[in-house]
Length: 159
Image 1: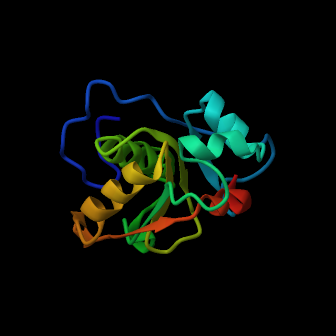
Image 2 (image 1 turned 90 degrees about the horizontal axis):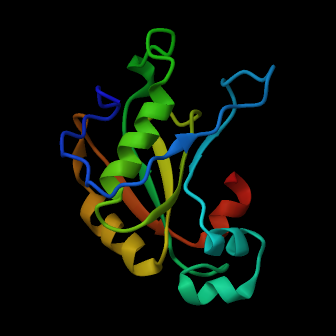
């Protein structure tokens, strides 16, 4: 998008994958739902199915290949009527910025979080740690964000 949801002004890497946000089913309001942007791979499909062979490539239950970014924005001042694509724009901006540190396979936003929350899945733990190390305490859209590496088990509750 031409405007940045979260204030990232860095140019996107040329090889960044397009990330699309899933819309809720017809008749379901976006309010109270969660969005998920996905870039799926064969390994991701196997990992989501619980197959152990994906663990060697950075998947599996206890692999720390997921990053949670919080405090991205203040939702009390975002008017979703004026900016209906805010969550999609935010998750795309964050995924694009974080793809500088590794292969972002999935990006999820939490529209219930008062201060903006995005969870990203990387292809391996080293990429997730690199992203977390660089993004933690970084200033983004006038706010100092927090980044934490999480176990892949978090995707069981948000997919």
